[in-house]
Image (cartoon, rainbow, N blue to C red; front, side):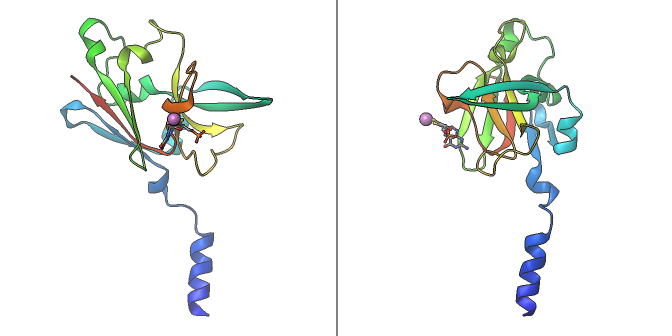
Length: 154
Ligand SMILES: Nc1nc2c(c(=O)[nH]1)N[C@H]1C(S)=C(S)[C@@H](COP(=O)(O)O)O[C@H]1N2
Ligand SMILES: [Mo]
Protein backbone atom coordinates (compact mmCIF):
# COMPACT_ATOMS: atom_id res chain seq x y z
CA UNK A 1 0.00 0.00 0.00
CA UNK A 2 2.78 2.40 0.98
CA UNK A 3 4.60 1.57 -2.27
CA UNK A 4 1.42 2.25 -4.22
CA UNK A 5 1.07 5.65 -2.54
CA UNK A 6 4.69 6.50 -3.38
CA UNK A 7 4.19 5.43 -6.99
CA UNK A 8 1.01 7.50 -7.21
CA UNK A 9 2.83 10.54 -5.79
CA UNK A 10 5.63 10.10 -8.33
CA UNK A 11 3.14 9.85 -11.18
CA UNK A 12 1.48 13.10 -10.07
CA UNK A 13 4.74 14.99 -9.46
CA UNK A 14 5.56 17.60 -12.09
CA UNK A 15 8.34 16.76 -14.52
CA UNK A 16 11.59 18.07 -13.00
CA UNK A 17 12.82 21.29 -14.60
CA UNK A 18 16.12 19.64 -15.55
CA UNK A 19 14.34 17.32 -17.97
CA UNK A 20 12.95 20.35 -19.78
CA UNK A 21 16.22 22.20 -20.16
CA UNK A 22 18.52 22.67 -23.09
CA UNK A 23 22.32 22.70 -22.82
CA UNK A 24 24.26 25.12 -25.02
CA UNK A 25 27.99 24.65 -25.53
CA UNK A 26 30.41 26.95 -27.28
CA UNK A 27 34.07 27.01 -28.17
CA UNK A 28 36.23 28.54 -25.42
CA UNK A 29 34.38 26.38 -22.86
CA UNK A 30 31.34 28.62 -22.77
CA UNK A 31 28.08 26.90 -21.70
CA UNK A 32 24.51 27.93 -20.88
CA UNK A 33 21.45 26.04 -19.70
CA UNK A 34 18.10 27.35 -20.91
CA UNK A 35 14.73 26.34 -19.51
CA UNK A 36 11.28 26.81 -21.00
CA UNK A 37 10.94 30.33 -19.57
CA UNK A 38 14.34 31.39 -20.98
CA UNK A 39 13.22 30.28 -24.45
CA UNK A 40 9.89 32.11 -24.12
CA UNK A 41 11.83 35.31 -23.30
CA UNK A 42 13.82 35.17 -26.58
CA UNK A 43 12.57 36.54 -29.93
CA UNK A 44 9.88 34.07 -31.06
CA UNK A 45 9.33 32.72 -34.56
CA UNK A 46 6.44 30.75 -36.06
CA UNK A 47 6.74 28.02 -38.65
CA UNK A 48 3.67 26.54 -40.31
CA UNK A 49 3.93 22.94 -41.45
CA UNK A 50 1.36 21.20 -43.62
CA UNK A 51 1.29 17.42 -43.74
CA UNK A 52 -1.38 16.26 -46.16
CA UNK A 53 -4.58 18.00 -45.08
CA UNK A 54 -3.26 18.83 -41.59
CA UNK A 55 -1.74 22.17 -40.64
CA UNK A 56 0.58 22.54 -37.63
CA UNK A 57 1.83 25.81 -36.20
CA UNK A 58 5.19 25.41 -34.46
CA UNK A 59 6.71 28.18 -32.37
CA UNK A 60 10.19 28.58 -30.98
CA UNK A 61 13.45 30.42 -31.47
CA UNK A 62 15.99 30.68 -34.28
CA UNK A 63 18.88 28.21 -33.97
CA UNK A 64 21.14 31.15 -34.84
CA UNK A 65 19.98 33.05 -31.73
CA UNK A 66 20.89 30.06 -29.54
CA UNK A 67 24.34 29.84 -31.15
CA UNK A 68 24.88 33.56 -30.41
CA UNK A 69 24.36 32.83 -26.70
CA UNK A 70 27.55 30.73 -26.70
CA UNK A 71 29.75 32.88 -28.89
CA UNK A 72 28.53 32.84 -32.52
CA UNK A 73 28.86 36.27 -34.13
CA UNK A 74 25.58 38.15 -34.46
CA UNK A 75 26.55 39.41 -37.92
CA UNK A 76 28.80 36.70 -39.34
CA UNK A 77 31.05 37.32 -42.32
CA UNK A 78 33.81 35.56 -44.29
CA UNK A 79 35.75 33.21 -42.01
CA UNK A 80 32.81 32.89 -39.58
CA UNK A 81 31.11 30.61 -42.09
CA UNK A 82 33.49 27.80 -41.15
CA UNK A 83 31.58 27.51 -37.85
CA UNK A 84 28.94 24.82 -37.41
CA UNK A 85 26.06 24.29 -35.02
CA UNK A 86 25.71 20.67 -33.93
CA UNK A 87 22.23 19.69 -32.76
CA UNK A 88 22.16 16.63 -30.47
CA UNK A 89 19.23 14.47 -29.38
CA UNK A 90 18.79 12.21 -26.36
CA UNK A 91 19.08 9.06 -28.51
CA UNK A 92 22.46 10.12 -29.91
CA UNK A 93 21.13 11.40 -33.25
CA UNK A 94 23.05 14.48 -34.39
CA UNK A 95 22.72 16.97 -37.24
CA UNK A 96 25.18 19.75 -38.13
CA UNK A 97 24.20 23.07 -39.70
CA UNK A 98 26.70 25.55 -41.11
CA UNK A 99 26.45 29.07 -39.68
CA UNK A 100 25.70 30.30 -43.22
CA UNK A 101 22.57 28.12 -43.38
CA UNK A 102 21.29 29.96 -40.32
CA UNK A 103 22.01 33.50 -41.54
CA UNK A 104 18.93 35.43 -42.60
CA UNK A 105 21.01 37.85 -44.67
CA UNK A 106 22.07 34.85 -46.80
CA UNK A 107 18.98 32.61 -46.83
CA UNK A 108 15.24 32.94 -46.35
CA UNK A 109 14.60 29.43 -45.02
CA UNK A 110 14.79 29.35 -41.24
CA UNK A 111 16.07 26.70 -38.87
CA UNK A 112 14.24 26.81 -35.56
CA UNK A 113 14.14 25.06 -32.22
CA UNK A 114 10.43 24.60 -31.53
CA UNK A 115 8.97 24.27 -28.04
CA UNK A 116 5.25 24.54 -28.82
CA UNK A 117 2.87 23.21 -31.46
CA UNK A 118 -0.54 24.85 -31.86
CA UNK A 119 0.06 26.65 -28.55
CA UNK A 120 0.79 23.54 -26.45
CA UNK A 121 3.80 21.36 -25.67
CA UNK A 122 5.20 19.10 -28.36
CA UNK A 123 4.12 15.47 -28.25
CA UNK A 124 6.34 13.20 -26.14
CA UNK A 125 8.11 11.59 -29.10
CA UNK A 126 9.13 15.02 -30.47
CA UNK A 127 9.67 17.13 -27.38
CA UNK A 128 10.25 18.99 -25.34
CA UNK A 129 12.34 20.55 -28.13
CA UNK A 130 12.48 19.77 -31.83
CA UNK A 131 14.58 21.40 -34.55
CA UNK A 132 12.97 22.11 -37.93
CA UNK A 133 14.76 23.08 -41.13
CA UNK A 134 12.29 25.09 -43.20
CA UNK A 135 12.22 24.12 -46.87
CA UNK A 136 13.78 20.68 -46.46
CA UNK A 137 12.10 18.14 -48.73
CA UNK A 138 12.64 15.22 -46.32
CA UNK A 139 12.32 15.23 -42.50
CA UNK A 140 15.85 13.89 -41.84
CA UNK A 141 17.14 17.15 -40.30
CA UNK A 142 14.07 17.51 -38.11
CA UNK A 143 15.76 16.52 -34.86
CA UNK A 144 13.37 15.17 -32.21
CA UNK A 145 14.03 15.37 -28.44
CA UNK A 146 16.90 17.85 -28.69
CA UNK A 147 19.02 18.00 -25.52
CA UNK A 148 22.11 19.94 -26.56
CA UNK A 149 23.36 22.45 -29.11
CA UNK A 150 27.07 22.94 -29.67
CA UNK A 151 28.77 25.69 -31.64
CA UNK A 152 32.02 24.43 -33.17
CA UNK A 153 34.79 26.57 -34.72
CA UNK A 154 36.72 24.65 -37.37
N1 LIG B 1 16.15 12.22 -32.22
C1 LIG B 1 16.06 11.77 -33.48
N2 LIG B 1 15.54 12.58 -34.43
C2 LIG B 1 15.43 12.15 -35.69
C3 LIG B 1 15.88 10.87 -36.07
C4 LIG B 1 16.44 10.04 -35.06
O1 LIG B 1 16.87 8.90 -35.28
N3 LIG B 1 16.49 10.53 -33.78
N4 LIG B 1 15.78 10.44 -37.38
C5 LIG B 1 15.64 11.48 -38.41
C6 LIG B 1 15.24 10.96 -39.69
S1 LIG B 1 16.44 10.21 -40.60
C7 LIG B 1 13.97 11.13 -40.18
S2 LIG B 1 13.56 10.64 -41.73
C8 LIG B 1 12.93 11.76 -39.37
C9 LIG B 1 11.70 10.90 -39.23
O2 LIG B 1 10.83 11.67 -38.49
P1 LIG B 1 9.45 11.11 -37.96
O3 LIG B 1 9.71 9.79 -37.34
O4 LIG B 1 8.98 12.16 -36.99
O5 LIG B 1 8.59 11.06 -39.18
O6 LIG B 1 13.35 12.09 -38.06
C10 LIG B 1 14.65 12.58 -37.98
N5 LIG B 1 14.90 12.99 -36.63
MO1 LIG C 1 15.41 9.42 -42.54
